[in-house]
Image (cartoon, rainbow, N blue to C red):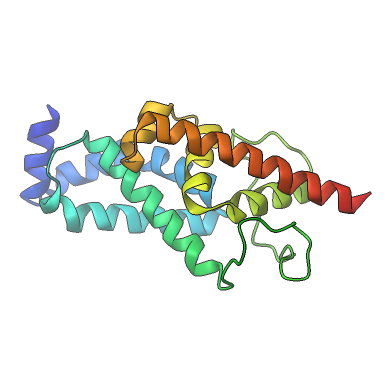
Length: 192
């Protein structure tokens, strides 16, 4: 079925087409969610929220982008919203060392899923440190970094998902890498 017909059927609340949409995108959306939120249960909850949002908002879809891009935009926004809610402390300053008095790694079992194909690190603590560093980046940098390095999206795809230009995405990626280098350097300098 062509995308226009699928969108039309979704807008008419055709449950069979919506079920097919879920079947087609569920694993991809889950992969994006687990990239942002490395906990299986939280990622699964986010997948449900994404498809609920798709179902409730399809009437507002204008067709300015592909349906898949719109779904990834919703996914990214839901993940960022979840992260914002979890980070109850407001960030102060542009960058903080990972282990300063104001900022420390939560040693709870939040980071439980590290079998994501984007991560081949074996040490759970390294993964915790990396995800904490990514989540401490400004939101736009964290989104671009996660979508590109973990989810494998191209700069063009990220530009469409985030509604930014390709040059903006490249700039955000450059700054994210520099900031992560500094954060991880500070962490390892403190570890020695």
